[in-house]
Image 1 (cartoon, rainbow over the protein chains, first blue to last red):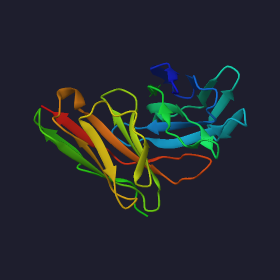
Image 2 (cartoon, rainbow over the protein chains, first blue to last red):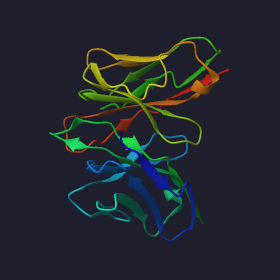
Image 3 (cartoon, rainbow over the protein chains, first blue to last red):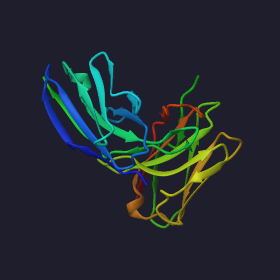
Image 4 (cartoon, each protein chain N blue to C red):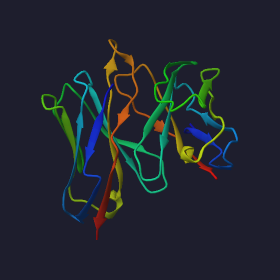
Length: 116
Length: 115
């Protein structure tokens, strides 16, 4: 089955600086890669996702890049703000008519702390 | 409409007792997932339902764990003879399927503490 590794496990960044979180996956057939944000005591929420037919996707201050050859993808947060402090999870799965419905396999999470 | 609802929000039980956790997914969501999150850890997959059937139950850690779903709606996760290592937050999520993307909507979880 799929195995997703995530690094670093903790990350502290000065407010205004950028943060980068990296994930690798094992199943070359995986084609869908979302990122979830979990604030303290709250439920995980989807913040951005990318499919394997694109290499980069941006949404305001966050972006995700995907390298299919190397089987890794990264989350980039620019101009970090205190409200970006949370645990971030990457995930991978196979989606599409050939695969039906397959579960999301999550990474172990990165605790991001923004230092004011 | 309403989001994913889980009950109870907190459950304290004694070792050896059985517990039942409930999940009400978003109406119309055909896919339903159970994940477990130990303190400070990641999201550990347990089981998922497509409709009322469970095509993938590979994450259930032992035969003490079981789950069912009825009416393509409510799901219950049952843990028999609870052990201290079962202590965790049990998260339920639902999604609209089929879909080229798999946006999961999570419930707020059930915090299970086994004494």
